[in-house]
Structure formats: structure tokens, C-alpha cells
Image (cartoon, rainbow, N blue to C red; front, side, top):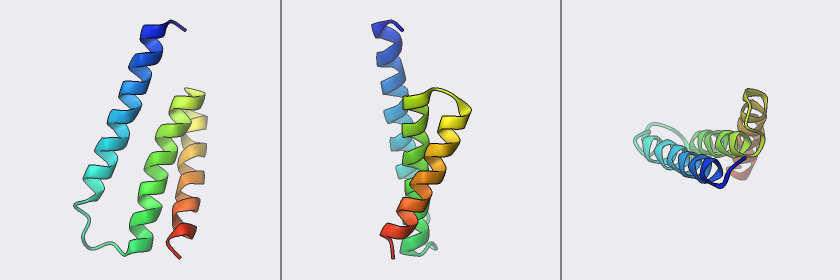
Length: 74
């Protein structure tokens, strides 16, 4: 993979995380635990996509992030 493709992937991943976090700030009706779960899933999905680069790694990252976010909010 060339350097420019890696840089583009990093920029897109960061943009996805920022978009996810900023869109979740509008969810006032959520409990803290629900919000932590959603944020964890978003960050985990973005990390899984950046690391693995396929749908399965994105799904696995989102699931792991959601579980961690849910438990942190306890």
C-alpha cells in the first residue's frame, strides 16, 4: 500500500470518528450508558476498519467497542 493511500485512510477514519462523536452529542435523551455504548461502537468500528480494512473487521471492532463502552458506563 502506498503512503498516500495510508494517509487517505487515516484521514477518512479520523473524519468518521469525529462525525460519529459529533452526531452523538445531539442525543440528549440517551442515558450515559447508552451513549457510552454508541460511542464505543462507533470508535471500535472505525478502528476495526482502519486496522483490518474489510467489513468483518469493522463489524468486530464495532461489537467490541460497544461492549467495552457499555461496561465502562456501569
